[in-house]
Length: 506
Image (cartoon, rainbow, N blue to C red; front, side):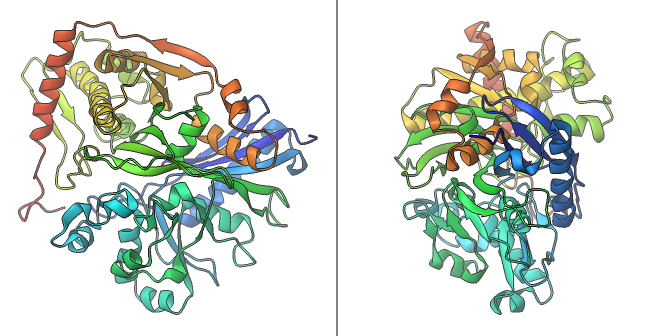
């Protein structure tokens, strides 16, 4: 085909990126821009959707310019996004009624508790694969409708719509108030707590429980089909926008985890591990989520088990920004390398509660095991180790739910450049940890989905053929020592439970 490239837009938690890929799945050019993290209160996290949209436009321009590519050379655009972050906007004006409420935000704790009632956390789990938790979109929409003046009336009048960030970006890219397409894909829809996993359609009863008008919800499509084309006045006029995957599903796709039992772990702001379970919907009894992995056009949906860890990379950011321990994130490894072990210190980063496998929104962070011996190096090491311990907890839960023993773990994301962490991760898991040549697997997955939809790539086999190993870490540790460290970690975790009560002001 004459088109040479596919463009991926990766709308992430801390920044938005645009990446131009060639047919071999290699990066040609990148544009990236951070957006403001807004913390109005303890436990609240927001983004300005208008800033995010402006940044998306800026990074697309940067990527196209750097690659010396114009829109005519782009075969398709794929979008991937921070999944549960939720926007409500006026479809007549295009203006958000409130900031986007970010996935880590815990303000909906009371709403979630009230929704559960006597049935508790698992009230909807059989239908939607998710426990009732602050993490997911539905309660965030309810909060906006309940707390923003006039929002409920406008929603009931049919003027307001909602979406995750993929929907917000797509709507604006395809024209906004002038014919913008209001669509999401099955992977993002499966994170709202409003989609039935079996039917892949909105559940009207749950929406009613959350007092969300059905008119607000986007149309659910597959992960790889043409949703619309770029607006005439934009940078990508008439270019098909043809792939959408939530960021973790996109990374699973980009890692070529197409067979049941294959898993990947992404090390970003938080950590997210997905295990492909094929066409089978596997309910979790070990604190994991059941989610849609991907759906290519008319083919059956593929499902996954997912373990979500709230705080991993952002703990390093916290050490940098809040504690001023170093100036740049990579320095954490240098600091950790100044000591041989953690000195008895364990850092449980339950800043916004614990995610998988505990799902305790009332937990808060703790640094335990401190003695006068502990120094900055030990704390840096404890921070890295926390990521590896949390990953092990999730992996063990996956193996218990699926009955599949993982042979190796494919990894991606910024923290995989940290050699100390990756080796410790292999040691804790007892299996090889493997990083691919193209570590931007999230953007790559979205690009592949879009490219497959328009025939730029033929299908999943092209993805498999393009995937290549860059680095492998093999376990190299005494078994007794490995287990002792993990037992201590488990002990540390229990110290964070039930912290938030009537005495705690946030």
